[in-house]
Length: 411
Image 1: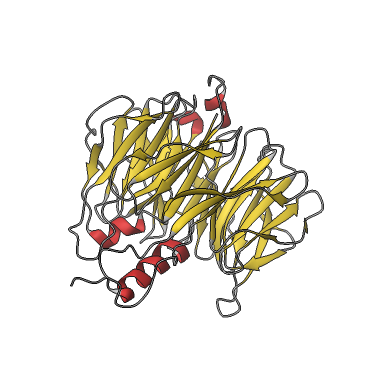
Image 2: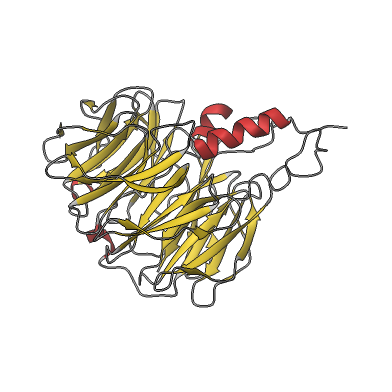
């Protein structure tokens, strides 16, 4: 009887959850959402082991019918007008399965119906798995083009909105995380095997001169005005002027792993775990203009993601090894009591009205065991836990699919 390789599953889990650099909260230019149409708020959850996306209606916190998408859905991004959820799939998860192509599926948020699955590229299996840990999708503010990074191929691939096929790939050195800045004129690509990011003109599709930012750039965020790209490296945070493509003074932060930008754009918040043995995490506030770090705020063990509420008053940190979420009142830099959040909290998303923060409990070890028959999945059923911001208390967990790894909110 065929069996799962437990070592392979454990290795995949470490890669996807500990990751090349955790999926932080990427900054998209806020001006791009000005024209969105009002509609029901929906939380979309990518279930990597089920090849589905679960829609959750925020008004009632109830899950809808799973939506079939491309294999191994790993990233979700919402179009600026809120009308489309784009899902990046990175292929089959089974250890004996052939490496599948990276795909893009567009879901209409009004109907929750998926469009045609578009093949983007075909990296090898290991490099496809890296796509779980990086923000490998970005959308221009006008919603006209979606860019997908293909780790291991040296390609960033543009897909026109509504198109059934991908456009010609753009060559860079070692593409990872993506971010759009400068009013949508430039897409920045973090070259995670290098010490650079590459600017790409959205008008011509031509890559520019790589910008040196520091070793192993792993995540990026953009200030709300679109003028500054903040690049997280293995040694800290480097600001880049989007008008000149010149890097500013780097801020040294040991063990930096993810970041988020406050709505005003003046402060960035960086997750750090300086000592991997203790796993103790902290949040380091960074003044963007001055490139100076403030006093670290202690959180839980192995923090993975930070989310800031739309009004900029609160931040929430998902602590993977503590099975908790730490709330932080940003005005005073004070962490509140930890909030129990399932088994393995990995992702966060704040509702547009700021009343609720949703926590994704991936429960990745739910079915893991040595010598497991192939008929049984090694990945457990996940759930989404709503936290009421006013009281920092949790609501009823919402069941989703197996091995959920990404979450986004459309309104």
